Image 1 (cartoon, rainbow, N blue to C red):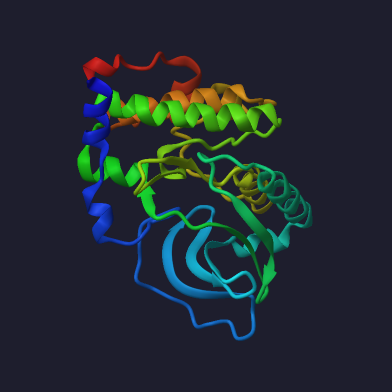
Image 2 (image 1 turned 90 degrees about the horizontal axis):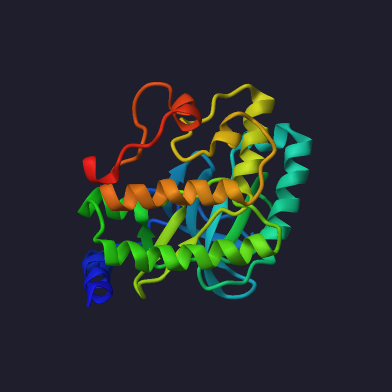
Length: 257
């Protein structure tokens, strides 16, 4: 049937040949082991606006984790740091098969980190770069899982704020997993404190773009943008004033792009 065909289309045979790219583009870089620290760095997995992600060994619980080191600017904003620890605590309460589990957060070697489930897979963003648009059945298979994850988080009053293909992992077991719950809000506060300009908000809801109070509906809007991208291989707005377009311009017909 169409769903099985879509799943087959979405299957990533190449995952069997390469390492995870949790949270970014894979890299062969690594750090010097951190002595007697709990988390021993194994390899760098990726870099992005929310920090650097490493594959690491948890020496206390003897397991492999994804170890995200947050930007140094976090230390310069005590309120953002406090909020980060609060958001990490909230994210750690989320226990769902379609959400990357948060294990721990704190400070090691003078840098703040968040330790989470290591996902053997790649991001939906990377899949699109390699393979182009996904078949409708495959998109539906992914969408159902993302909806279940967000519904679960929203029931617990937790809003992601940054749903996008680059924040969604696809595992060898054909399972979608959303990562980085809560981090978007903290990084936004850090940027505002240091007057840094954030990235172009390709996925932001109109109310988020305008700086208004948001709720779970902002995630639903971003999910819609994500589905558009999965179906077409591109974002609805890619040129001009992106925030303006999200507020005022109707999105293009997916069949026309």
